[in-house]
Amino acid sequence: MSGGRLLSLYINNRSGGLIYQRNLSPAAAKLRDNDQLTVASMLSSLALILQELAPTSGSRPMSSLEANGFVLCSYDVPTGLKLVMLAEPGTQGLELLLKAIHALYADYALKNPFYELDMPIKCDKFDERLTRLLHDFTR
Amino acid sequence: MIYNLYIYNKHGVCLLYHEWKRPNITAGSAMADQKLMFGFLFSLKQVVNKLTPDSGMPGFHACSTNKFKLNYYETATGLRFVLNTDPNCGDMRECIRYIYSAVFVEYASKNALYTAGEPLDNEQFLFALDKYVRSLPAFTSGAA
Amino acid sequence: MAAQRPPYQRLGDVAFSKVEKVNAELFTLTYGAVVVQLLKDSEDVEQTSIQLEKMGYNIGVRIIDEFLAKANAGTCTDFKETGEVIAKVAFRMFLGVTVDCRHVVEPNAPADAMPAFHLIIVDNPLVDFVELPEHCSTLAYCNLLCGVVRGALEMVGMRVETKLLKDTLWGDEHTEISVSLKELVHEQYRDDDE
Image 1 (cartoon, chains in turn yellow, purple, blue):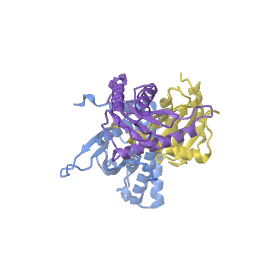
Image 2: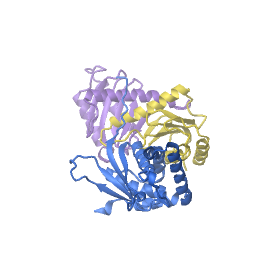
Image 3: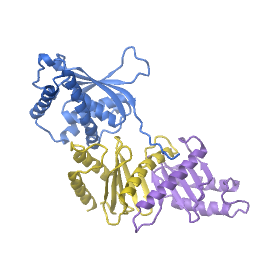
Image 4: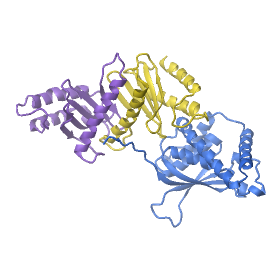
């Protein structure tokens, strides 16, 4: 149903800081930790700049990017949380997938009282459920 | 709908800015807007290349918000074309390539009086550009 | 003309039907136990009211994502609609009760005064079987709810002031919470490089 393959997932907090990253394919670009933080933060600020460059009013930040080597889909939650998925060109259904990942965040991160908001997500249950969700998507 | 077009050279000089419809401008001046656009393209290109898989081609050709799509084309000579359209315009690469090859190359590169790096205000060029863009089905389609 | 307004009641019912339910008695007892423990620890009625509001705030900042992810409520066009959504969808989804939203205009307020609404809860599950003793008759027992609304709205860019105005535990006919908008916070990312 989906076609194509997932490459990597980034989740940023309201300040554009990276709180979760996972490479989902051996083909994904491998970045050092520092680079990942910088790239994630740049994605947040570039998304806002594209909004400023809009020729019409009422634009929200960047929601998709078509690169030659991948596609990127971004889902922004009104709380400022940003979920970004990179996939091979031609992959469909990314926005729905990101919404489902947001629901997992609402469950396994936010309902964990020991998880501190805006901090990196280090919750095993979140990882497990995410693995299962992604596995179902790519089947 | 086709909103506006920017053409830059590799040094970031804006050779042309032309608009057909632009109800919204956030930057203070045309110059600030053009600088912001170039800075955006430059930074985005760097990020994209860091994120591109080893097996993939570098670069990008489009990015969108809910209200518009930025279509991008970079030539081997470092010329950068940005064409902003409504989000449903589809793949505009062919159109931009046409603007490059048939319009720019014809009226600018081949114009003996045009010095590379100068702003493009050649009347014939602008006329041909305008005529071509207005003839595209994408020009009249899509919400404003 | 109400014809075009989204049916929030229906959204609330749907959301409520999808969530997992907990035994109401257990919920009432748990909340009560927390309140009593707080009172014992601080021995200060006013402090306990404040603590309850803070606890509510911490719940609110987390529960908002749950709401956004699962309730499908869309975007509100103005503060009035926000009040409707909180009353009809959110309270229904999380507490199982239908809440009324009354919009408030102060009689002498200037034209550009910030908007406010009151949430009116008739069948409040928190207060089932509860009676406030003499020495803490001024306790804002339901202050948790005030905090939840404050925390949730803050996460989506609205700074509000909430206050428990009426409570059945105080002899009133229902629980009433006022929510007034103080500030809209627009996050802007500014490039530091200039």
